[in-house]
Image (cartoon, rainbow, N blue to C red; front, side, top):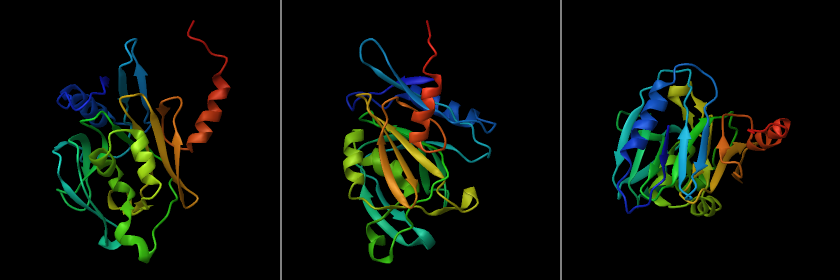
Amino acid sequence: MFEKMRSSAAPLPILLAAALAGALLGGTAPDACTTLTITDTNGGVYLGRTMEFALDLPWQLTYFPAGREYTSKLTDGTPGLAYRTKYRMMAVTMPLASPTDLKVVDGLNAEGLTFSALAFPAVGPEGDPEGLRKALAAVDLGSWALGQFATVAEVKTALESQPVILTPLSTLGNARTPLHYVLHDRTGAGIVIEYADAKQTVYDNPVNVMTNGPRFPWHLTNLGNYSFLTNV
């Protein structure tokens, strides 16, 4: 299912909420989670995704008003970055440390910025004691990005100075946030955020499609194997 990305002049789209819920709650077998955008003849951008996940997790459809305050929790509960949201968000979430500690898995904000988490064998920074108070746990990237930014360009710029660390997720066997992240905005621009070799890399996404691991450059190279195909 697809829904058009809208600006703050319109209410958060209810149809996208239904699409997200259907995609996430309906996935029953491990396969290949996929996100993609399409653009209509009038330049309108639509996002769609599937969710094939092997675990039955307590997904929740959640509306977040603007002005919410967050403090990212790092390893062993150490407090990290504190931030306040500027934009309303609608998201599919999952509780982590408590029933009210809802982490954004997939969603959008009132400006048309979207966020999706996909499976990936991440190996990223774990943080240093000196910088922990300014660090953001990767599991909080969704609320941080959707709550504060309107475009992928803004997110990309902010990540240049924002330290992000991977923390163990109890719901996933204490794996250190085994995900990579895809963001799109209402202009059609997209980026992919990955953590590998103990560092963060942000890629522009020229094809506006993404799935699970391996790394994003591998997927772009692999597309060359199908360059002879046509829809004619």
